[in-house]
Image (cartoon, rainbow, N blue to C red; front, side, top):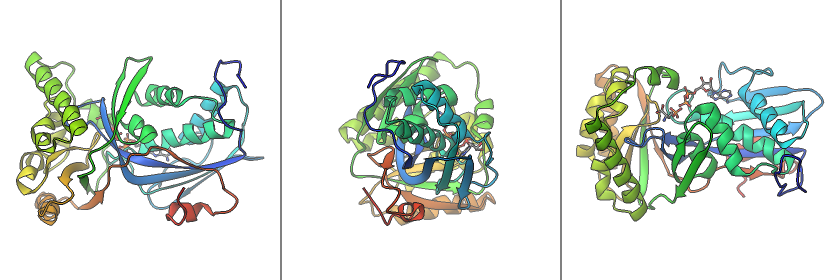
Length: 332
Ligand SMILES: Nc1ncnc2c1ncn2[C@@H]1O[C@H](COP(=O)(O)OP(=O)(O)O)[C@@H](O)[C@H]1O
Ligand SMILES: N[C@@H](CCOP(=O)(O)O)C(=O)O
């Protein structure tokens, strides 16, 4: 069936859907607003047609998020329905998230993508994924984190204010990530405010060459190049003023077993890539924790897997409870 907006439905409309959305790490060092990677840490959203709108937020990570119709998920769902020319004014929305809020692991991107994907599934997937990417990027203003949550894997993306291009590549199998998550929030807005409005030609060349090398290294599995390829002069030197210990960690982590290291998204989390067979994994985790502790910052580490899959859809909402899916007792 072709809708009057010219989109083709690829599935039957549904009354209810659940989606799992991966976290993301954006930039990967030099690829500011361009590179992203999906990580095996998830948010889950259930969306159902309802007689009256209700929004239930479960778990510890969503504290403070509004539960009325100003909620981002409700608003993005309505934007999908408008674009798809479908009317579903009232929704029952439930969300649970393991992605820490405002720490640079893409909580807002996962909420956005989850809302768009779940609403689109209710319409019968009227909108193609590219349209969801455009809508999410128009909201976030950069495609790196939303692209990773939508498509999974590593994304290389551009945005010109109207149109996003995005190519997904499969992460090398040996790659594993260790994140250190400081116990304070740093909003993306604040972390963008400290950035300069102009760069020198030398710094621009520095970043273009590293970002290009990083994509080639990840694509070809030449992981020994990551150390150099993850260097950045565009955003990290400025953002280091906001994260105690960051400068030292970015300089020293490769001496403690990291293949490469970067601020994750807008921070304050930092992400180290390691060879999963490395004998220095424990040493690296200790080094990161000790460095933050020396700065008087409480933090925690978490091993994460790069994931190849983006949004996961669950349609059988009758058989399994929402929390069975969240707790991983049901997989596709
Ligand atoms: N489930 C959600 N529902 C509504 N808003 C959300 C949700 N998750 C995150 N957000 C919004 O995104 C903000 C965090 O975004 P941001 O500063 O970009 O950090 P992050 O790196 O976690 O995405 C939160 O303060 C909140 O306003
Ligand atoms: N390129 C953006 C990415 C922000 O990602 P988030 O996950 O921290 O929201 C930036 O660096 O500002």
